[in-house]
Image 1 (cartoon, rainbow, N blue to C red):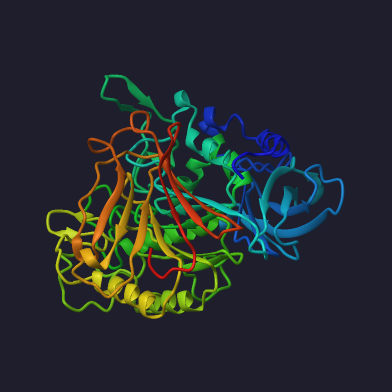
Image 2: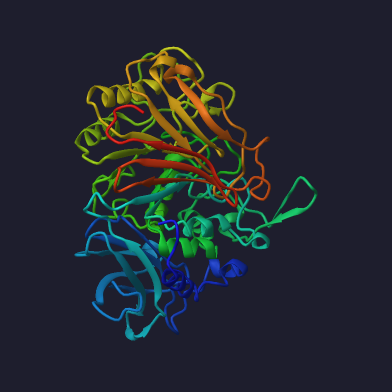
Length: 522
């Protein structure tokens, strides 16, 4: 998987023909929805929700249009071409939509192309936009690779045309992963993007700008515009066309450090209820990623879910934002709400117990043992700096870790982003105040396009020890000075061994750890 076939390079290059000028043409961010001419999918394509026999494909039209997806095992679409009729893309979904592909062969490379047609005249159709993905394998002999990271367009560092935009995504695409776990802060709805930002050497960072990114997002249109902003980058369009995405959210899809019921004390906001902003952000998130359970038709509309990627891997995507209690000093001796809420905690315990995958990756949008403050006295994540017995939100994590140990659930590890540096932290009961758990690893990576920050301190409650860390020496270091980080997980189909690599744009591998299958603790 480490190299990408020439034919797939040519496919992705061709798919960008419509959008290669986007990075230099921010005016395309808010197109006129003309009624003449042909529809166009200027924002590319994405795939997600990949299984052995199905997938979901996303696109956005520049006007009212019917979506169709054609699939074939042939990149040139010479044989076995199937046509899948999709939805009518209109203003109610901001002209976005997804089409479900079914009855696909397992463990195969699937080539697809999206075509948009005028609903009044099907002869007027768009140029096809191409993409590809691999369906999940049914055999343990297939290797698996995925990447993860988070934090894009944060702290005022947006798409810089002088640097070629989000170039890390092209480097990640060339790693040819089976999917990308987008570990939260997929946009910065609370982070306006100005035309320039000062750098330490006196020069200026230059940003592509749009109207919606000129202020904090409050309206549904502004949240939608934040998602569209990132799609102005040709690197992201090429990445999306080749690499399926498994996306979760954290705080910046809404605003910094938000929690349910919060009243906003910030003069930039005329909307003061975080819940109102969150509902709009959730709708836009569901419109701009290839997901179905956040759209209409499912009662729960939940963000947390499990993706089963063949016999070797299950990924448990947590939502540590929607069900949490208010940020506080977090020292209460009882806390039934915590950071997950009781229903989500019961769900992840149940699904971990049911899993028969060799590896169970727990995708957390916030770290466990890194102290993340919220102001002078409150805390934003799980840890609060008290090294003693679990308190506050730590109580839920202790219950989950105890469950994993007592149920002898093998092959668990945690991956996260959020803190804007990369690290490998090992947790062990012999170093901890709470000891009723099996050892485990937590790997941290990011940002892929935001400010870099110094490493945070660790809370000793669960006995973390840093095996590796690399971070910025000061807060909000620009991506040009502190290149992006991302993580890579490889599972060998023969031995079942899992190897984690922490990577940096242009810098290769920073840290490597290989874990053996079949163990409760590592």
